[in-house]
Amino acid sequence: MAVALFDTTTPLAPLRQQIIERLTAVVNGGRYVLGPEVQGFEREFAQYLGVVHVVGVANGTDALTIALRAAGVGPGDEVVVPSFTFYASAEAIIPTGATPVFCDVDEETANVTAETVSAALTPRTKAVVAVDLFGNPAPIAEIRERTGLPVIEDAAQAAGARVAGRHAGSLGTVATFSFFPSKNLPCFGDGGAIATDDSQIADRARVLRSHGSRDKTIFEHVGYNSRLDELQAAVLRVLLPYLDEWAAGRRAAAANYEAAGLGEHVTLPASGPGNEPAWHLYVVRHPDAEHLCSALERAGVEARGYYRTPVHRQPAMARWGAGVELPATEQLARTNLAIPMSPVLTSEQAREVISAIAGALASMHATPAGSASASPPSGG
Ligand SMILES: *Cc1c(COP(=O)(O)O)cnc(C)c1O
Image (tube, rainbow, N blue to C red; front, side):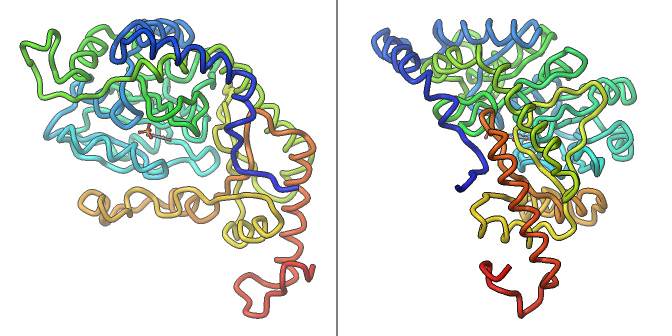
C-alpha cells in the first residue's frame, strides 16, 4: 500500500459539515473583509499562543514583510536569515528595502543557532529572521539574549509546537504564521498571521495591512492590501481547537518511526532541549538521499528532498548570496529527505516506510550509487 508524504484530507474529514455550515453563515452574513470572523480568530489564536496580539493577513510571506516593517526594518538595514529554509523567509525581506544576510544552520537540527546568527552580524544588522524549520522551534530565547536584536520568528511550519510549555509563535519579538493548505493549521487557500506582545508592532502591522491607513481617509504609510479573509478565518476557527491533537499526532508518528528502528537506517531529526516539535515535515538524513528518494518512490513511499538549492544560491538572490559560504546548509541540502508525516500516520504505515527504506538501502548497497548497471526495482 502506498504511503503519501502528506495527508491533508483525513484529519479534516470529520469537520467537513461544521466547516461548510460556518462558510455558509459567512456567505449569508455578507461581511467578507475584516469582520467578526477575523476578529474572533485573532482573539482565539492570541489566547491559544499566549500572546497579546494577533493580526490576520493574506499569507505567510506578507506576514513576514509586514512584521519586519512593523519592527522598524527599512532601507539600509541588514536582516540575518537562514538560507536553508523556504524561499519566502528571505524573499519577504526585499520589499522592506533591507538587505538579507544569509547565515548557516546547525546540521543536527537544521535550525539557526545563536552562533550561526552571531557569525553574520554587522553594525548594520537590524533584525534576525529565525525559522522554526520543519516544525521544530529554533533556539529563539538564546538568539534574542545573545544578539539583543528583534527576532522575527518565522513559525509558518511550527503551529502547535512548544518549547518548555511555551508555544512556537510566542518566542520571537514578533512571529509569523502561514495557513497555506499543507501547513499544520491550514485554511482553504492563502492566509497568514502576525503574533506579538508588543502593542506598537501590532498597531503598525494593523495599519500596514490596510494600505497604511487607520480610517481609509488618511494614509500614513505605503502599505499593503493584505487581509485574512472572513471565509478563511471562519475555517481557521473550526480547526484551531484541533491543532494540539494534530501536533500530538505528529509527535506520535515520529515516536513510532523511532521505536520501529528508523534510526538504524538513516539519521533522525534532532530537536532542541525542552522542545516539543510539531513535525510539519519529518526530515531524515542520508549521504545518498537522492538515490534513496528514487528507490522509495519505486516502492510506493513518497519522499522528497527539501531546499536542494538553498536560498542564497537561488538566481533571484544572486545579489545577496554570491560568495556566501554555508557548509552545513550545503551539506543538509544534499543529504536531507522528507518521509511521510501527518497527524494520522499509523504505526503500520511507519513500519511500512521503514521496511521500504531498509529494502531500498539494501539494493543501493548491492548496486553502488550512480552505477550504470543498477538493477531494475524488482531485481532486489
Ligand atoms: C510556507 C512558508 C512561508 C510562506 O507562507 P505563504 O503563506 O505560503 O506565503 C514562509 N516561511 C516558511 C518557513 C514557510 O514554510
